[in-house]
Image 1 (spheres, one colour):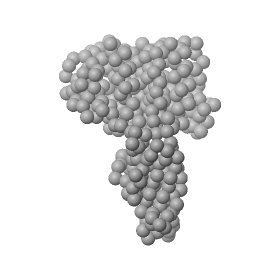
Image 2: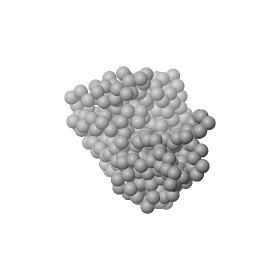
Image 3: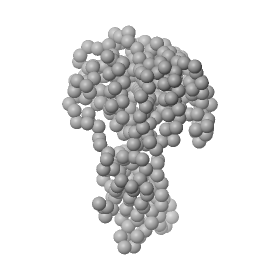
Image 4: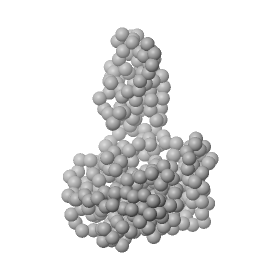
Length: 340
């Protein structure tokens, strides 16, 4: 049923309606990563309206750009849609389901901060580590750690899955991104810092000799795969979400990024390699992402090189909720395989 104002989703379309009883606005435009369009004013409804074929998604984050009669524009969340995520409105389709682990009780644990000098990149970071009350030598390390936790709820997932007995206890290490665009863009220096400075210090802090499971999204996924290729003994498995695995024939639109050439040289080497230091790896990517094609190509290449690959398309876009929603079952299955 269509609301009098706000947004709706059916099996075949998404629709938006913004009230403007006095027709004060000169234009309304939908601003979303996967769909855009201009609204039409309907005198019979005294509202602006837009209907579009439904993309291959279960939820949509969007904003509205309003044109004012006196000139000027502003981009805002939809005032007629109460569902928000940050400064964006959220439209959830009837077939969207939140992860069930959001409603599970969580295992108890403690946080600590560990200072890490990074000689290879002449930098430093402070990692946040969550440890369960049960002793364990298992470790998961996440790039973009603070945002993975704040927006992707990675520590909540960890505590819920351990608390429910669905996963064995493990430490969760959140690595801040630092000089993100430089460090995460297939940087040999950062890969060396991760392998020589970060992971050994964490292993000593936690008393483990096990290879760790690396987690990353977007450029963070690229950097985690790059580090694993250069230092395979440090990693027991990888979760790579919407990795920025740029390829020249697929991603020319990214060529303005200053480290584009370094990235495509790395991805080209991986694709052309005869074999690789294979570990279990799970890749997820949104059905409507620009990165989908290069993620499919990377999944095929890693499978050909001996990695135990799971690849999944998620009915969402390039955002933290999509990555959060894919943690179970894909990270769950990966950790059960690695932590057996």
